[in-house]
Length: 112
Length: 113
Image (cartoon, rainbow over all chains, first blue to last red):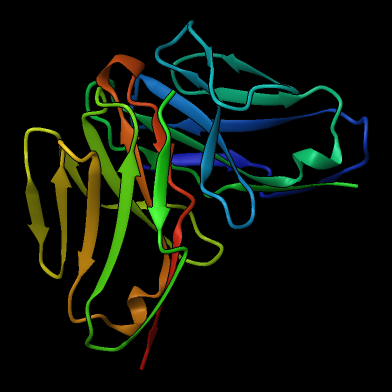
């Protein structure tokens, strides 16, 4: 099992550019999450998907969109990147009803 | 929504000493409280968790206590070792929200040899 995988590992964007962060899990988990982690702060939830076909906003959704493509994959899109979106992005997943979350390795995004 | 506060933000101890990290939460509906360890440049990993129907849980050198009335929970690490140095995060979850968690801001623990 690869667990939770994320691509890319690193990305540099210019202000206004768009990109999609990819996340996949092979543990047959129902729920998937996108968090951002800024220096000196905890993880803040951007969006989550309780099950295939559903998505909901988290604490900091502005500037992002998500797609739950199928049970395995949950992507995060930045339509027009801003310097304030410079952060490390973590995807996570868990089986519904068991709340231990498994995290991916993270994507370090810099917006200049 | 839920608010989780974590203290201290940094903690330095001598090897072999104990370390205690405390968190408070605001929503009495929260019923699951995990602790994650994050080493530099790595992903967060669960080290211990506790549910609201339990007051204390122990796993070797780490333990977690929960006071539902006061809405706070703590992580205790005994006989600390240099490899315990990392950032530790507490979190709170409700089972009505698909397990989504609200995290504290983290505690950077340094264990000096």
